Image 1: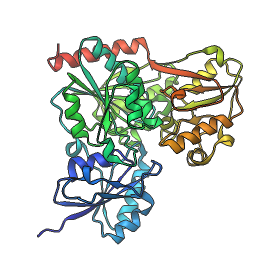
Image 2 (image 1 turned 180 degrees about the vertical axis):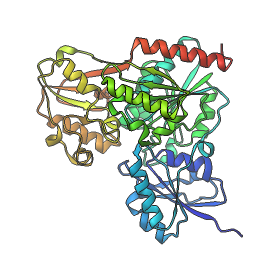
Image 3 (image 1 turned 90 degrees about the horizontal axis):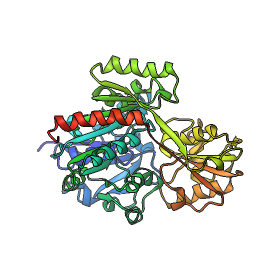
Image 4 (image 1 turned 180 degrees about the horizontal axis):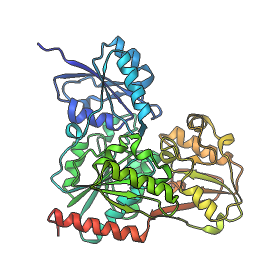
Length: 445
């Protein structure tokens, strides 16, 4: 009898579970001993449940904190460690490789061939080189274009399964605000799902992406893969659009797996050109051409608007930004800061002295943040801590650029002005042309 290869999968409640489901779950060559978790609060100590882990793992699979990785490799005589999370600089990835190799195990990065599923419907994938490039607004613009042409569309979002009971998140379909409550969605989940609901769309997410795909195919002519972080798609795309951000010029060739998306793209959108420096735009263009000379490159405009400009002018404001963009996305500011400055806020306050508990810990973990409060909310406890931090703040107005309506999840003692951002008209025209070509290529027109 052969000896199974003992494996640990390093993750953050997303790519790690997908790689297991697609490649390892029914593969008798391997014994997945554990997952390790980082980034997501309170995920460690849980189990990947038996309902998802299959017949080879009737007791499920334990999830440990990543800090225990070296100890686990040695104690459990691990042969190989699979790195399965994203939006990471190359130095970080190779640091983990050194840690794993020093402990005696192989270090593995799985690619598209072993992890991509194939759909029986055409797939447009929208990915990015970093978190916060503006990918979701492009995905939603493509959704609108397809719907306007009479096509049934289902968007499928990169996973965010943060529930204590992962089995309840196996396959989720969101088409109403009631669905958000049904699945006890976190703020980060709401940021991605709520905008689709607002425009009458349908979006799927969860844990088992084979099952999710087959359900989505039942109601869709076209599938949109709305990628998360800077991960590459779970589904083999017929068209891959990658978004790059000149506000972080150079990151497109220095982050994993963002460069995979850049090299694989059919179309690269250099986004936010209306607020970026020309030199940075040209840096991104040059880097793109150097690694993917066949890609079509277009410049994207990302506009920012306030629901009520008068609420900002002359006021002392607290800016709440989209959480992932300004935390592991490394941005010091987002659309809220831009809107506050454009609309002549008297002062943008530093929220750090008002932060409590996990919100305070977030600022300690991401010291580049000074005048922006990330909309953290991975569970009810953290949502309450965000609410209290806002209520503690000495300001006149909250400027909120998270994609959701914060008043649906928070009770705050200050007025909130909502900031919206989207794709500019010229960029929409470019996208319409790209979609037309896609439809013709796939015999849908």
